[in-house]
Length: 134
Image 1 (cartoon, rainbow, N blue to C red):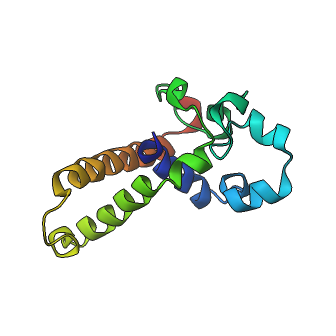
Image 2 (cartoon, rainbow, N blue to C red; image 1 turned 90 degrees about the horizontal axis):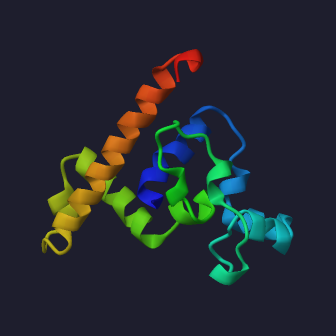
């Protein structure tokens, strides 16, 4: 889910919205444990989470928000999401094979790049749609 959420969170940045709620270090310093429990902070044990992370981000109606179990900020900073983002950047330059010359995990990373690319296209289409038509 972090892969699909990343373009939406970054889209908030381009709209000049406050992204501090997606900054895990800042959130942990400035919020109470109860507030983090209500946001389903991924740094808390699952049995302590009492909220739903989906309310924290604007996504289109058809986006599967029921699949967002943890805070989007935690989901997008998972190591797998970071690695997929790096692969996406290398793919954009046409140099993914140079980044991973041994071909290890190349097929999986290409799948991740496709997910990121498709979701980025969805974000762009959604942002170009007038608010009254969303």
